[in-house]
Length: 154
Image (tube, rainbow, N blue to C red; front, side, top):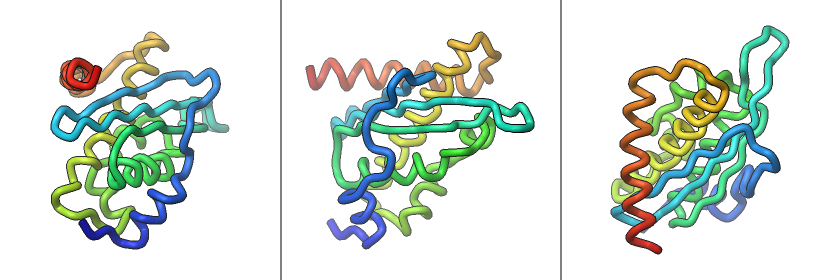
């Protein structure tokens, strides 16, 4: 598997790796195919206009080069964005942010997007906020997949 320099840079020097102390929410996802597991921790605050922004974000990934690199770039793309902007981040943007991924590893970019969305789902739920229907459905899929990974790995 050949990775470009940017992917290798994010793998060897991941940005925002680790856990946040007292996060506002945690998104946890797993991929049954490859066994990767990812946690994204977020802290949210209001900006000067009163909009909720992701003030801090960290991740822990149990996975391959691509899983770690996509987790790292996702945190960079999201930090400082509003909740609404963060929900619009796509796997395509993550792959482009890394300068591409080998086709066999594109599925790893899905893991980062799903973990981010799961963290936002958990934040909205905890805050008593309305959750978009599409996000609710995605949460249900993520929950089933994560349970399947845990059963397989544990």
